[in-house]
Image 1 (cartoon, helix red, strand yellow):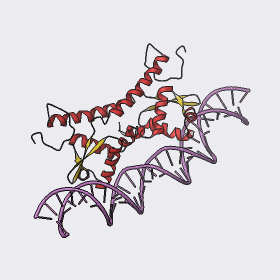
Image 2 (cartoon, chains in turn green, brown, orange, purple):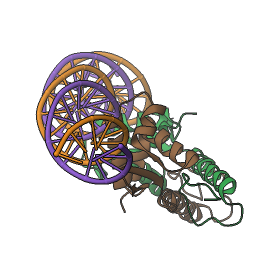
Image 3 (cartoon, chains in turn purple, red, brown, yellow):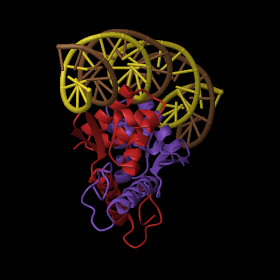
Image 4 (tube, protein in one colour):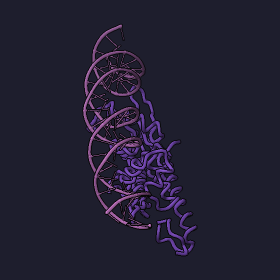
Length: 111
Length: 111
DNA sequence: CTAGTGTGCAACCAACTGATTGCACAGGGG
DNA sequence: CCCCTGTGCAATCAGTTGGTTGCACACTAG
């Protein structure tokens, strides 16, 4: 449960692979290699990382290995966003319980 | 307006700085440098990158430069999540308009 | 102007990483 | 068994990058 999900999604190729798996359904590294301008091994490495952070999962079917998006993959991202957001709101409430048009926090409410 | 926001949030130090700005309000690079085990210049570089992707903004006050979180900072992340999610749902509808308990896309609905 | 504090920029460095190539291993069909 | 297809692992490499140090520049106070 680490936030390395952001690091995983930080790489453009990896994010594209992830999106492709989401749109196109389960696919093998070889299939994905045909869609992207990188080698199968590069794709495989990306898939390994995506799997490590829990964004995708493997499914072996005979000779081939399909990768598919994990249903709750982006839950962690959403939770982080929510957590950060609520932290903002908390601080804003401490500063100005009535309005919230300003995110700056150095000045005092009375000043 | 690029998705480099993910890359920016991918680095742990940068993400921590961002969270700290969110919780503690506007702060200078020097102040942040006291909170993290890296030099002020390192912090400054991170802030520059965070600013470049639109996550934080600068505010000059006399001699010092405060950085603060941009209100709509995480909107891009949320939009991306929503977009990917809706793409999943679309594909799932094409496969099985009634149920959605499976994200794998290789099998046919009649099989 | 001078002193002091704070910021910005440039050079530099080690570590990481995205990508490649080569080869060995696993499974299905003749 | 052999052949073919597909996957996995190791070594390697160049580019990126997070971090440091050093120094120049900007603003405020006396």
